[in-house]
Amino acid sequence: MQIGVILSMPERILVVDDDPGMQAALREVLERRGYEGDSASSAEEAIQKVSRNSYDLILLDVKLPGISGIEAIPLIKEHGDQGDIIMMTAHGSKEMALEAIGKGAYDFFTKPFNLQEMDIVIKRAIERRRLKNEVEHLKNRLQKDGGIIERMVGASQCMKHVKALIQRIAPLETTVLITGESGTGKELVADLIHSLSPRASGPFVKINCASIPENLLESELCGHEKGAFTGAVSAREGKFELAHKGTILMDEIGEMPYALQAKLLRLVEQKQFEHLGGNKPISVDVRIIAATNQDLAALIKEKRFREDLFYRLNVGSIHVPPLRERKDDLPLLTEHFLKEINVKLGTSVTGTSRDAMEFLMGYDWPGNVRELANVLERAVILCGGQTLSGGELNMAFQRSPRIGDKLNGQAVISLGETLDEIEKTLIITALRKHRGRQCDAARSLGLNPKNLWKKIRKHHIEKVVTVEEPED
Image (cartoon, rainbow, N blue to C red):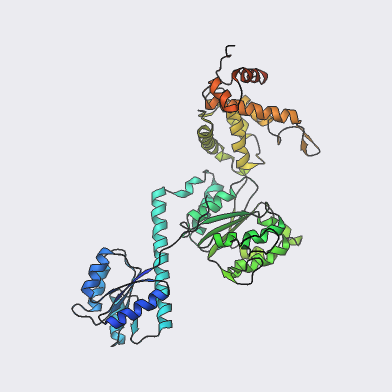
């Protein structure tokens, strides 16, 4: 998913007051606070404006020429997507306030009012509208997508449990810890949580804590100022700033250096940090999801992971089961991956034979769903028809270092064998892509057709694709 910061327009506020001086003063105050102000001198004019425009908030005077402000409340409410109404009057009473709120007003001010108090109420009303819009957006998105959760393939009992947890946790603002072996789909779970949350329209930023050197990790997370370290030729935002108003996934959190965990704890608790080389506090609004394939409880005992950080992250918890515990899902997963592989390679393998499925069901899949996808892709490349056979899967397995003979924990594969396998795979992929047209395949590989034919014979793949020996 592409990282992007969503730029929002300033909130629009309509001031309805028959006093031009009050109109001007309120609009000036609102615009200084970053809002976009508009005004009307009567309820009738306000009703005309809301019929043509949408406002995030309406400040409505009670005493107006013609229709009163209180009488105008239900008439304004008739016009679709409008924000809350806050009443204003110089002749306020408890009874008048109750009448206005009973007709749908959000709050009530008595003139002259305190600007600090007005700020608080306006911010609260604007935030209420924002949350309401986000919830509505989420409902519409779910209806449009027909259930985004179905991106996670699986109908086994344990996967139904995982899907139910995702749907329960996603709308909440809690931090989430996703656990599971490598290749089980933890990143997809995080993606679904973000997509099903009120933050779905915001950025989704990912960082792998294991892939970044320790001396650069803090800079990646929190950003840095110009000159903070050698090579810092300009200031740079960190991942947490890029994730503002959205979600950040911290993958392989168990690999985070112990010294940095204290800083992360503060970030999780306060959502505040400083740039490396800076001293200005930066606050962010971000939801944190962490993922790991390690046993964090064991790391805590070994003093390699902070217990307090674990408890801060492990509020919403989802464990993704390994594939060996959900073999009932293998037929669905196989069908799903074959469709993706056909699109990628231009092939038309539609299913598996009975012995092929028995082959798949009889294996424990230590590399989980990721390994299944890779094995199926190798098998499709070797497949000579529209159905994968057990023999073709067996060949695909034999090409895997995980399955091959091992010596001292290392696969026994020579450099020559590795290069031959890469060459064979590239040739088969090119021939399939060009529907057996050897000249086109040769051109895409940078070979002449005669040399390509020699390599086809060398690798014994004449029967895998229909090709003809080129003429001299």
